[in-house]
Length: 158
Ligand code: FES
Ligand code: FES
Image 1 (cartoon, helix red, strand yellow):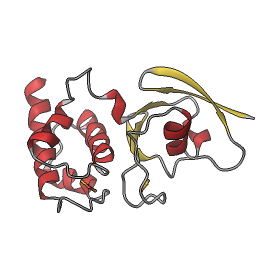
Image 2 (cartoon, rainbow, N blue to C red):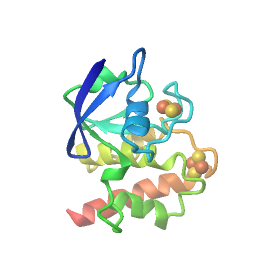
Image 3 (cartoon, helix red, strand yellow):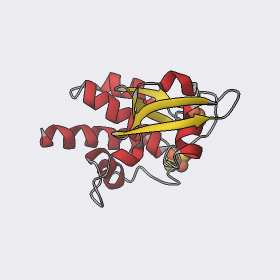
């Protein structure tokens, strides 16, 4: 049986992989119970499964589990501190950018990667990142507002 060793949300984890093709999304959800990561399309199109791997946003449904060996992965479960939401999550609440919420964890994790690497990302860069996500509910306007508000909150906290 294949074994995957990596760090998830700051904790070293060892996962025994099933035979055949296993994707990171399935390891996170099915083996580790981190169901905050959502799987929509399963083909890299919708962005709902986005997590941060070694600082970069990746669609975990397209990352073979073996590729995560030795990496550090962050999921949506890593952001809030107890009952205190991360500023990006708080911005989504305040902007009213969550309806069914299925797309939200992926978008939040992509913005987390973006603003960690580039806190002063311009509007064009933010829009390019948001373009990698599909949302069936909000019409996107409030998501764009939430992204801008998140950037303001993170700047204020610097
Ligand atoms: S579920 Fe991974 S991109 Fe859609
Ligand atoms: S809030 Fe429902 S898919 Fe985005």
